[in-house]
Length: 138
Image 1 (tube, rainbow, N blue to C red):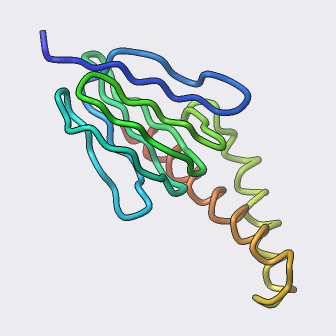
Image 2 (image 1 turned 180 degrees about the vertical axis):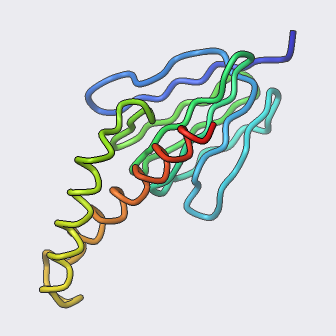
């Protein structure tokens, strides 16, 4: 049996995932990083992106909207603002959300206080679409 470590992904409202895994690939703010058993301890911030989790049976994809990752040699804890497993993502609804956000952005300029909110919403919708599509490809 391969070496495993504990992964816990939590948001303010729920525990999204808790399991023994072989590898995690996460979207760090300074670049994507991978974690294997026995990894050096570190703490980092996360940006919106795809979290890839590999365990002995399967690969799980998840869309996260940013947060923090604490890595030790035996455990990874992801504290995310939001996190959705690929199979929880409603592609039709997410595509509609992206369309709405893009239309709203066209009517705003970068100095508008609402611009950052809509830009983040569009970016997260793009991440969710990519995660859901990647999961379908396997």
